[in-house]
Image (cartoon, rainbow, N blue to C red; front, side, top):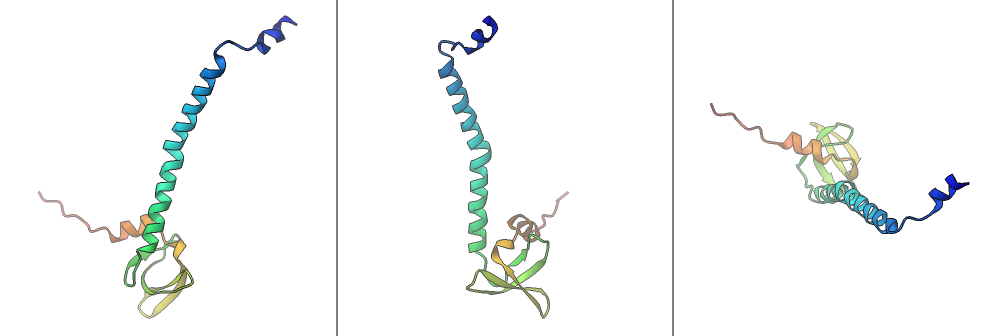
Length: 110
């Protein structure tokens, strides 16, 4: 009986320290997980809103093409080869892959 009563007794001051630790864990979780994801989602949305006709893009599936027409229903017409067009959703465009494709190669000077 004595063993079980020892663990059931509340320790003085233990509640506030565990509350502080829990608060710090939530704060760390917010700054390392939630905030960066929200920032990335905001950048992706801005990237999609800034697209224009003639931009070279890459879809999430890896399809490369040039935007031919922006449709009102949230889709766009993508020219994948001269004379070949496909209709895709704006949300299927990869910001990272498109940035890598459009990156200007730098020349190393020796």
